[in-house]
Image 1 (cartoon, protein in one colour):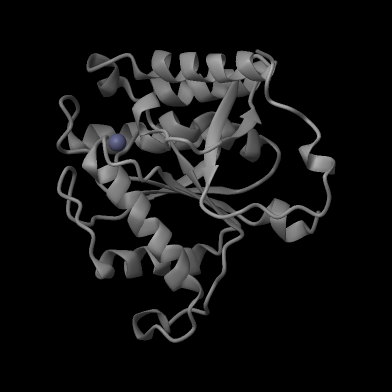
Image 2 (cartoon, protein in one colour):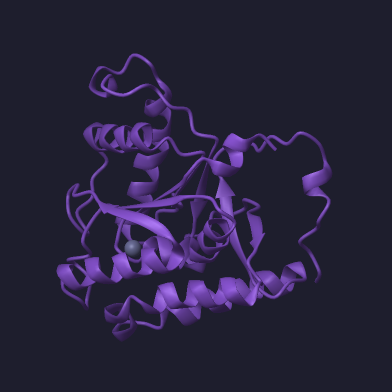
Amino acid sequence: MPSDQTSAPLLAFGAHPDDIEFGAGGIIAKETRAGRPARFVVCSRGEAGTNGTPAQRMREAKAAAKILGATIEFLELDGDAHLELKSAHALALADIIRRMQPGIVLAPTLETNQHPDHWRLGTLVRDATRLARYGGVAELRARPAHAIGQLFFYALSPGSEPVGAQPILIDISAPEIVAGWTAAMTAHTSQRKTRNYAELQLARARVLGLDAGVAHAQALWPNDPLLFDSLAPLARGARRF
Ligand SMILES: [Zn+2]
């Protein structure tokens, strides 16, 4: 595999301070422990949440990112629960993509029956990955164009999984990976008062894993067809029942 595919940073976008950890934290734990840099960009301070102040939620997100071995920055767009689809936002996200030059980008799924910030951010990120590679966008000229390798979507709940689309599954069964992921989720102390989200995500990973014949797995949905050099990476099936 070319070195740029394994060493280029993974860039994950979240609408709220805990989205990335809950939707893809196990995969990120596995990637960072394998040496891939990871960067988180959180697009609100979670100020509309039922529990936790913005300052507390930012602290929790920083602690969780540190556990997962990722850097984190916050980008203020329209505020929690107010995100709108605007070309200015897609351009701001594209500028971040140009600055960070990721190989893989993660964003929330586009299913609309979930928190409206999630699918709107996923849509803005999808637009941004295109704008980032277009050479002639005036607002982006300060940095060179950048084409990412892949955009994958993560689902924050069963209801936000794309209907009828096959996911790719990542085996996150190693105990130290599950432990790191769990620690990152539970770092969001304020959110544990609202719902037991960590238990929900661990149960989802357990079901996906059992169905695939491993202990735990987490799912991603590719935005584009995946290209492989051969059938070799595809020989492992993910169906046991
Ligand atoms: Zn969220």
